[in-house]
Length: 345
Image (tube, rainbow, N blue to C red; front, side):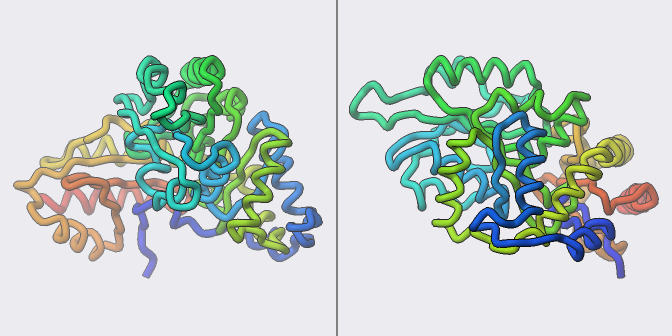
């Protein structure tokens, strides 16, 4: 039985075109720099991001960790949002493996970090304090509602980082969603940063992988650290081939996912007991608050939807998260809405 899986866009599987590209991929030893398909993916990714070089990695978590380890030393500090993915969902790798401290600031309602708060949070002149070396911003900001961070804000943040002598890293897991929502080329959101990681395996449908981009010197250092972390994937062209299709084809259709998320949000928020907890979706995520008198037990809601082959995610005590992606079609959206309406009949 086919399920309509709204838990995340990480559940996407490769398209037929990707599978064909993977089967036909020319490969070599990537650790030696000899895999032509990996090299093509890295070059294409860097050009799109407005940066010098790219590095194919297994995941966004690895990409973010490599960016931090490349920039910081043990005992250094990184400023990031309290709802940032690196802080919430990356197993504390920067501290466990790098001895690096996270200084978290509150995310604003629009997903950004207050520039004055960042300025005041920078430390290191006092010998009692860790040295601040880096700022990380997430775009789109997942936990705040899949919100997009504007190019204008990013240039202001970049100017502040340079003034304070800090590196700026973008956790751009869904940066193409942000670019589509803003109607701008993706490098308008990334070129001002020192580094960026973006995922191929979420809304872009590739089975595995992310790309970390930055300067030539930065990527040279990150490549060595990737090897240290066990990330040398050898004949990885079979995976990179799917990533190339992602960049050539899947980035151009994300607006469909956004439209379907908006349709779900508009319809379900009109049903008694369900409201938009984080506003109208800007991208492919819908966050719904569930009234306790309608469904005091979340398990019952989950079970009733599963009976209709619908899988949902939870992001809070009374909050549901629905994520649209390539494998959610218009007829699926209408089935979801009809099912949801029947939940409270």
